[in-house]
Image (cartoon, rainbow, N blue to C red):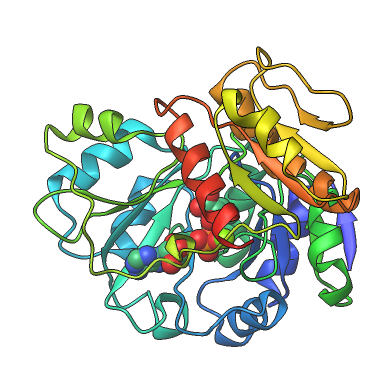
Length: 325
Ligand code: TXA
Ligand code: MG
């Protein structure tokens, strides 16, 4: 395995049937050529992920999107035009390109155009090497199944470094700017359906599509399992007013606090992050959960941000992290 800052090395590795961990604006992905069954199978092996969980296919632009989907509704094209490149994934009925080994056997496929400059360079390079303008990189978040997504190259190495092989690559593109996974919208029905909240909100989707976003969905999404994004420490969601009582009732172990900057740190508690707003909360969330485990904290007290903007996604991930305790 080699670590590099050169997207071309990652493109060469992926084209050659190897794996490459890839920075995106949301979290790091573990990428393979989406048309290569053997390489995609290695993603599942490295992640320890059940084979029926579908992967997101990352493509260079909205034209390539058209090659992976069929009967793409007008509102999905509008969302693609408005938000790509960017942190939103669109699920559409699949074309011949999207094989069972990528979709988990479902007849839909999840597509995203990432905005991280290194991910873009890698995709452009991969289009050239493969001579395919619609080439796709299948990439789930580069963590072991059910664990916290990586937002730095160091996190990736900590998570799966030991499982990568000779010609696999870790592309170091610095810290992820969003910090939580993409919004996923199921575009297989008459209305957009929210499968996973992210930095692009329900309101954003409604404004662009002119349609009401629904929440019920029959489509499976592993990031929507009750317990996910779980650190070893027990996560407790609470309000600022309940912090003192929670600490008084706690055991002997050291406790961590995750809360916006206007909330003070009680004596004896480890402050894991002091984000000034919901955007910063999202950016530092996963690093803070990892830090808690590195410090072998017993518990993490998390005071969530308000449920607006990316705050909705932060609350969603905190609830799932707490469910894993
Ligand atoms: O921000 C992100 O989306 C990151 C970066 C690397 O792009 N990727 C990511 O991948 O979070 P992953 O595999 O950890 O989560 C992808 C989610 C899963 O919950 C999966 O079930 C869902 O997308 N998904 C993929 N294909 C789907 C499909 N055809 N229908 C419904 N859900 C799908
Ligand atoms: Mg994931």
